[in-house]
Amino acid sequence: MTTDDSPAWFPVFITEFLVISIINAITITAFARICHLRKRSMYLIINLTVADLLVGAVTGPLFSLKPQIESNVLIRGITLTFPIASQVNLSLISLERLHATLFPFRHCLIKKRLYFAIIVGSWLIIFAIAFVMANLSKQAFRYALASFSVLTLLVLTVSYVIIIVNVQRSPHSQHHGSIHTERKLSITLFIVTGVSVLTILPWAVFHSMPVDLQEELFNASRIEIHLVLAAIYFASSIVNPLVYAIRMREFRKAIRNLVC
Image (cartoon, rainbow, N blue to C red; front, top):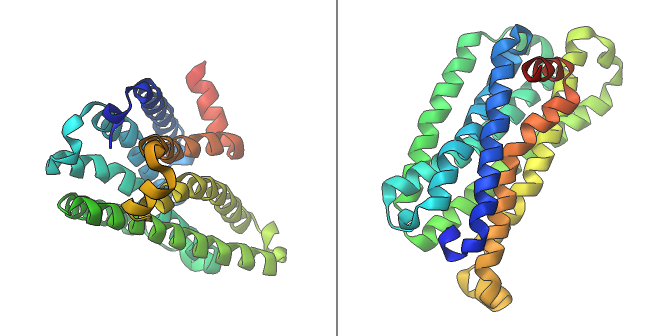
């Protein structure tokens, strides 16, 4: 289902995707201008921002403007790629933060090339997942996409539960400079992830329901509910820069310089 099923939603999605594109473009520019923001711990965050930018710039127009999206495998694959990339990057960030929290000194020894290898490898896997899903039947596609979303949310939840428990058990180490910085970043990314879970989970739950059950529960409003949840789902790509602006002083400074 696209906005062609309910034309009243067309301006809503166009506005949302425009905001996603602009705010993430500004974020990438801030990362590019401030060298302190381009450290190893930020590489996956920058990669996530690129994925979110492409959600607004590529997925958005295809979702809003292309009525053949349901039947064209190539378009479906491209449309899926960047939302999947956003979720995969959230999972990678949570695992990276988990490693930084559990093994802080070992984490400091990780080389830059490993981050680059992870980023390149993740994109190859993302493209493969997207185009495999695009070739599934409509019913199988819905279940596969919902299951993928639930799996990534499970990775996020488990990772950050372990992080929180670990931080609570060792409060004395929060005063060491580098460890304190890493844990502050972990808290920032936990907030990003928490809001992302709230935006993705309703969509995943709805699409994991059988179509017959959807029609029985929601009847004529099923398309409208789908579009409402889709709008909330895509809003996760707006969350990240807003949290960075609130939590990261250097990022706020970079944004002020760009505005000025």
